[in-house]
Image 1 (tube, rainbow, N blue to C red):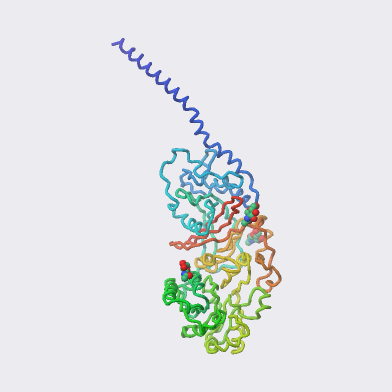
Image 2: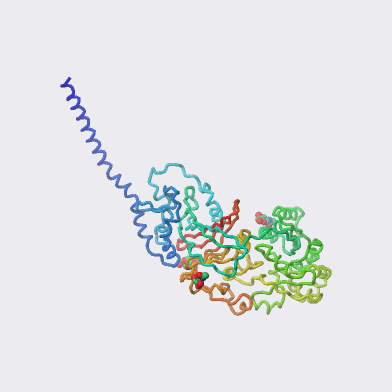
Length: 561
Ligand SMILES: *[C@@H]1O[C@H](CO)[C@@H](O)[C@H](O)[C@H]1NC(C)=O
Ligand SMILES: *[C@@H]1O[C@H](CO)[C@@H](O)[C@H](O)[C@H]1NC(C)=O
Ligand SMILES: *[C@@H]1O[C@H](CO)[C@@H](O)[C@H](O)[C@H]1NC(C)=O
C-alpha cells in the first residue's frame, strides 16, 4: 500500500510536468497573437492625437469648450457598451460616449474613422439590423436627414427645453440663458444607428407665451388666383394655417379649362382631406390674366360668403400665415362694418417708387364686408379700367375710384420683398402676421418653422441668448457668433439679403452689416414636427462643406409639452 502511493504520485507528477510544458509552449506560441489584438487600439490612439489638435475655426473652439460639461450630460444609466458608430474611445477608460465626437470631428485631416473600428473581431457576432431599426428617438432625425440629404454621419447635439407658459411674455426682450446649447455633442452614423446611444438632455426652462387657443375663423374668407399645379403644390402650406379653421378659401384656377373633371375632383378631394374648406372656381373670363383673376375672384368670394363674413382677403398663392390668430386679432381692432381697405407696403422703398402706395399683394389686401360687396359688382369695369394688369394695383384703383376707403396699414403684415439670404429678417425678433416669397425670392421651410407657432403661439421667432455667443431665433435658426454677443446689436436687423441700402430703413431698419460665415455660424431649421404626445421637435442644421469632408451638424431641440 505504501509503495503504491508514490508511484501514483510519480506518474501524476510526470503527467503534470508534461501538461505544464505543453501549456508553456502553447502560450509562447500565442504571445504574438495577444500582442496583436492588444494593440488593436493603437491606430486609434494615433488618430486620436491627430484629431485632438485644436480646431481651426470658432465652431470647433466651441466644441472644445464643452468637453467639461459633457460627462454630466450623459445618462449614467446608459450602458457603456460602446456602439460602433459613436465610440472611438482610445485609452481604455470609460470615457463617456458623447465625448467621442471630439476625436472624430476632423475628417479633413485625412483620418476618416472606419465604421466598427472598435469592434474587435468576435466581440459582437449578432447580425446587425438594417438602418431602419434605429431607436424611435432618432427616427425623425433619420427621416429628415434622408429627405433633406444630410451627410450619413452627423455631429449631433440634443437640447431639451422645458417651456414655462405665461401670458406675460415681453416678446421684445432677449432673455439670457446661462447654459450653452452646444454641449454633449456626439457623432451619429445615420445609416448604422441600431445601437445609437443618445446623450441625455438636461432641460432648460424657457418662458414662452401661451399657445393660441383653437378658434373659429369663419369671419375670414380668402381668395387666390393660381394655376392647377401651383395650387396643388401649395396645399400643404394652406393646410398648415387653414385646416379646421372654419375659414374658406376660394381659388380661381387659371387653367381650369385644360383640366378634366377627374383632375379637378382629385384636387378638391386632396384639399378636403387636409381639412381645408376650398372652393375651386373658373376665372370670370377665360381671357383674363392671372393678375386680373387675382381681383376677379372677389365676385366668387362674395358669392361663397355669408352673413358671418367680416373680411375678404386677397392673397398670393405663397402668402403664408404661421397662425390665423394674429391676423384675426389685428383685424378685430378695425371696424368691419365700414368701408375698409387694409394691408401693408413693400419693405423696399424702391418697390413703392415703382408700384405706388397700396396693399402689396403678398402681404394680402383685406376688404371689409361692405366694401367687398360693393366692389364685387364692379369687378369687370375695374379690371377693364385699370392702368396696369397687376392684381394689387387693380384692387387699389378700384378701391380709390369706387369708394372713399383709404389704405389702413396694418403692422405685422409683410410683403417680404427681400431676396437671397433672408435670415436677417427672421432673426430680428419680429412678429410677422404673415410670410411671403419663401419659395422664390428666398428659401425658408415655413411649414416646419411655424410648428413653433402651433406649440407656443407667439414664441415663433422669439429669441434667447444662450451662453456667451449663441442666439436662438425659435423656429428659424441657432446662430453662434465667433466673437461673442457683446458686439452684436440684437436691436437692429442684420442686412443679410441681396439688396442692402437705405431703401429698407423706413420699414425694417435700422439695418446692421451682415456677418461673414466665419464670424457667424448659423444652424438653420431643417424640419420640425409635433410628436404624438405633443412635444415639439426641431432640427437645426449647419451644412458642412463636403469638399472639405466636413460633417453636417445637427441640433435637435426638443420642447417638452
Ligand atoms: C444679457 O447679455 C447681454 C450680452 O451678452 C448683456 O448686454 C445684457 O445686459 C444681458 N441682460 C441681462 C438681463 O442680464
Ligand atoms: C400634387 O402634389 C403632390 C404632392 O403634394 C404630387 O405628388 C402630385 O404629383 C401633384 N399633382 C399634380 C397634378 O401636380
Ligand atoms: C468648400 O471648400 C472648398 C475648398 O476650400 C471651396 O472651394 C468651396 O467654395 C467650399 N464650398 C462652400 C459651399 O463653401
